Amino acid sequence: MNKKYFEVVKSGMSKAKPPESCTVVIFGATGDLTHRELVPALYALRCMNLMPESFAIIGYARRDWSDDKFRQEMHAAVKKESDCKEEQWQEFAGHLHFVVGNFNDEPSAGYADLRERIEQIRETEHIADNVLFHLAVPPEFYGDIIQRLGASSLAASKKGWRRVIIEKPFGRDRKSAVTLDREIHKVFHETQIFRVDHFLGKETVQNMLVFRFANPGFEPIWNRNYIDNVQITVAEELGIGTRANFYEKTGVLRDMIQNHVLQLLCMTAIEPPVTFDAASLRTETNKVLQSICSVNIEEDVVLGQYGPGSLDGQEVRGYRGENNVQEKSTTPTYAALKVTLDNWRWADVPFYLRTGKRMPRKLTEVNIEFKPTPHLMFPVNRKEGMNRNHLTFRLQPDEGIIYNFLAKQPGAELVLRPVNLNFGYNTAFGIEEPPSAYQWLLFDAMEGDQTLFPRADWIDNAWSIVDPIVERWEAKPWLKLPNYKSGTWGPAKADELLKRDGKKWNNY
Ligand code: BG6
Image (cartoon, rainbow, N blue to C red; front, side, top):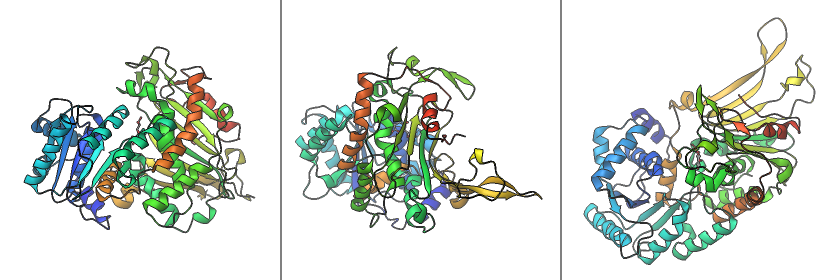
């Protein structure tokens, strides 16, 4: 991120005015998410003058850090993410503060310190009585923190607003999500709750809606009459890194399918909302989930776990060899599913979903494969399936939209070749990569706009789709693991899933 980047992004904002004065409290301020995403995003907003005129950011965590230590740590974190100018940083750093406390402290301990600190800073910095709490903590602490926010009178004010951002995963199944929701509603009203799925904050994901609903060209053919199948891929090169404790209990179905992958499916299959606002968008995405037919687990679900292999010429360990992973762990790191939607637009169109760790490269995309031309008069090798058009939303990296179609290769003979029409953020907008999802999620939460945050009923429905698969797998895994080598596109069975339907994954 540099000056040009900030100018381009800011010029693309019609509102482009900062939210009203508030304090942002980050629980889990010493953690990875705060370093990698939250503070760099708040800093980027500040550089674009999109932070409130008067504001404070208070980190809360149990490590014995001072304000200075917090500022130093965050400085290093921001420098990693952006081209951080000293003067701008010094100004921003003055807004950072730190309070030491445990998440399960008595309301009279850490939480009382926090309340006192918020009030004190508010008074000296002339900040309005508005507070946004961001729970960047392991999910098992959500209940404790929310309950203590209520008990220590931090969650209510007669003079201003209180809001809470909760990270995914929201629960570990439908039942626990409903319980968690009940706990939160004891303290916060639905309009105060912002459940994060950071994929919704990605520019490229929002652009899927713009592409479909701001342009007349594709919408008339966006249905079962013209679309043969949809492939959604969220491939990661990374393994689980240092997250074994979390990942062993979570696995790919809870970590990726229940949220990010189903959100991408919703963005592809959604009916046009009446307006671009929270109520319409959330209602329509929820309808997509409601129309998903129950998944045939035996036939249409392939799970996998990475074994040792090589990536970029380097040998890498298998999942079972990662630190803190059980020797015979059956936690899946890969999932491929075929789902269908029971509605007029999509009946009988297969949606193939797949996501996995330790794949050949990072690639998130939605690929729409159109039906072939009914009659092709040109000489073309039909076996290659060349007479199909593909539309690809490249969500990351090399963000853009690609339309793949046939063209005549120059020459005396009539030879057809697939070519690409390519929209890229770099060429169109002059920025290497779009702004981070968290910039917009934090900005919207400060604005009180819930459009990009899933509603409780969406989360419920998403669990209802994933729960039966998880339960079945955890009761008795039906595949022998590990079943794919690191650095490959997943288990062979995932290829068979498509081959059976006469199709294949859009691999590169
Ligand atoms: C997180 C998952 O929600 O999303 C991680 O917990 C995953 O396991 C990450 O790596 C992927 O996000 P992104 O934005 O890098 O695609």
